Image (cartoon, rainbow, N blue to C red; front, side):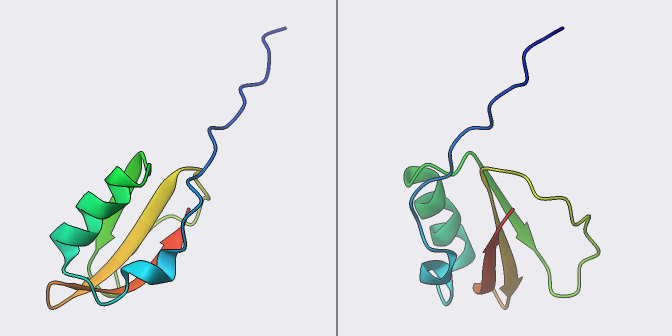
Length: 71
């Protein structure tokens, strides 16, 4: 039987620190802080709700991060 993969650790980072930042700047900062996956979404986007370790989500309104969450 194959070993169960160990999920990579998430950066020690708080998503709320990105709220209000320009979307491009927020994405660059998140990658610098160690997030392997950064996803920018428009308001009301239909998305799957699976939790993915190492993913940071941004809801972007008017070019700025309005909401940010892990997974």
